[in-house]
Structures are given as structure tokens and as C-alpha cells.
Length: 135
Image (cartoon, rainbow, N blue to C red; front, side, top):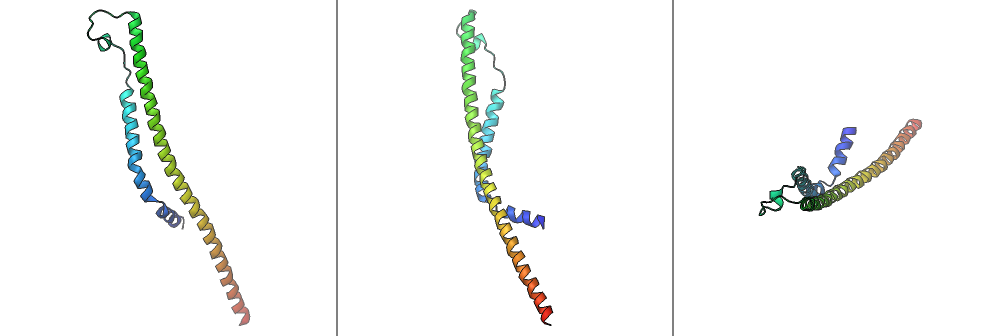
């Protein structure tokens, strides 16, 4: 009985909407994962990376400026990842809301049907008792 109810509820889930949104969720998750994976490596500031045309050593202030520039790039990258995460969470929340609404609708429908069958059963039981008394 429980398995039948679960299958009935699962059959009423708007799978077309879930399937329609699944590629965008997967794409956003993949993009987020790739950006996190590629940015996860710590990037150190190398003199040749900052000023490749100069062969002299960099001063301490130039090194600090270069490190600051790299940190600013990192912050921008993290902000971009946060925006991707927010979009992914929004899509997942919309799917979750849709599923919860459908489950609630089926719960109410199940309660109504249970009450209807209980009423029909009571009428049938009363009819059977009436027929036995009449005989």
C-alpha cells in the first residue's frame, strides 16, 4: 500500500519541469566546480610573471603591489563563484518548492479520498446492517 502511494505521488511530480531545469542545474554546478578547481591552486607572485621585461630584482613595494593585484584578481574570482553559487541555489530552491507544492497537493488529495472512502464504507456497512435487520 505504501509503495503504491509513493509510486502514485512520484508519478504526479512534474518531471517535465524537473527534467527541463536539470541541464541548467548541472551546467551551473559544473561551471562552479571547474572555477573552484582551477582557482583552488595557490598562485604565488613571481617576478618574471609580474615584470617579464625587467631583469633586475623588484623592490619590496613593487612585490607588495604585485601581490595586491593578484589578491584583487582572486577576490573578483571568488565574487564570480559566489554569483554562480547563488544562481545554482536559486534554481534548486525553485525545483524544491515545486516538488513540495506537489507533495502537499497529493497529501490533501489523499486525505480527501480517505474521508470519501470512509464515508462510502460507513454507508455500505449501514446498508448491510439494515438488510440483515430487515430479513
